[in-house]
Image (cartoon, rainbow, N blue to C red):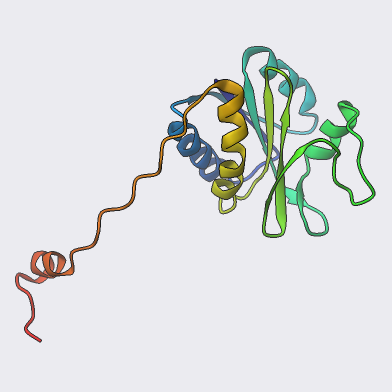
Length: 166
């Protein structure tokens, strides 16, 4: 899977790019391109889709809960995706986390992942997108290794030169 990242008026670029990089590493994929767009982003998104299988678009989230990436509405309009009375697009996979949500749009051979400019919620949203992306692009998701157990005695001895007697 060739993946690109498009920041649309985003501010947390370092943190969100890092979250996406960690996610892609678990899929044995790499982020091959990243850029920022200000104002009209649809021409840049279109250009990225000519060269990449998947584009992650990051923009601030706004609106009454659930807050949605501001880049979602113009893209849904351009693609003629119907919006229901609840404000949700029809036929699009939602990626809800708390009071904010992202979206995964899939065609036969490509995907667009619309995500909020909030690195705190990205791991949970990307986790929801993992299975569909793995299936679409024949990827395998590696398990997240567990952190090693903390050995308090060893840490105390290393820090203070000995274990206190109790």
